Image (cartoon, rainbow, N blue to C red; front, side, top):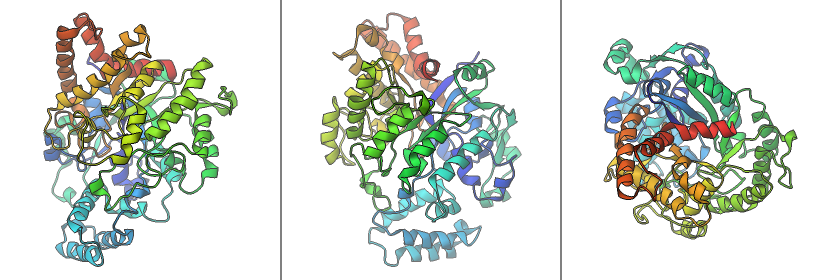
Length: 536
């Protein structure tokens, strides 16, 4: 049997959803589903460039790449990407209005001239950066989508439900993928020829099942299908920007979904009015997106209440069965100041009561810092140019204290495949070296900790898995830019861990090749699988 792979954080349905939303396909179930794979720019895919114009983990790639355990993250795009920043949103709207008046807007030089004129009139002088960023936005999303995001009609919670239903629409249906060719390209590209030319990316017949619990996950895996577990990225998805009073009701609605949400990433890029989000957007891109409101702050009273409700805890941190099934908290994107509060005020007292809440950090790199306080202190100085000992030191990444909390609680850390998060912005570091440097640094935090038992240290490899952030428009490590390349990653990772065994195997609990293989397989699949067995 082929080896299986797990991904703790990805968006396998997202590209198809965004490209076909607001089109006539939305009323055609045979086409409006994740198996209608949007055509990729294969030149950029093969080079492993930033994934604005190609798919990294659509169902066809997952199937052919043997990614059989997928934590699919639902994410309503945040309005902050298209509102705020140094350029007034009205100028963006004017561009979108010009370009969207014609289906051939992208190819029409007159339209582009009109659009740039609309953008330039009254805009700041720093136009080159703005235009580059605008171009990247347009590459990642159809214009109709961006117009919707900045319209008064856009509601996070309504969009969350639509995205969920899109993913559910083909759950447990044996399907041969279709190929969605956007715009003018469909006039001169043949789906049949593309399928033959790029079979790994564009030719698959398979089945994914959005699972209700671990038993269904196991049944799905035994049948060699893709087991999908629902997650949500960002509490803003519950409409916290418009009505905090509805958050409690909507959390209870989440808990009644037939296909449940396993965990929710508490924060994302912009203020959710519940707790601080970590600095994540490079300063060079502040021209269109300003995330300073609420950034790097601590928990808010409404956020404390929401976390307790998600975890099924009363005000005294006792389990309250009346609050429904537990939805775990993912701390990626959560500001270090809020993480510190969570460990001290939620995880620690619950642990003392015998209620172990596992710490999830779904798609991260290592920051180079030992403690959360160091991370908090540096958060006021984060900039685009500094690394710490070769690591990306922003508080979007984890410090040693975070890693120890994950190990202490039997939690799970997903290794992100984004170059910047891993500490390399210009493709200067070999892909496996970049990922290995971050992984080993986190393992070292466990091995050297005074707070962990010897048993916890001996399981040092069991707290990690893949958390690629594929389809999150990342700039991936070049050698592993999509889920078809997981096998390559596993082979390279084996060599790294095997070399470590030869150098210092006893220290890292790698006594022989069997232990090396177990560590590698754990990271690639089994750790996530066993985590679900304990908690889903």
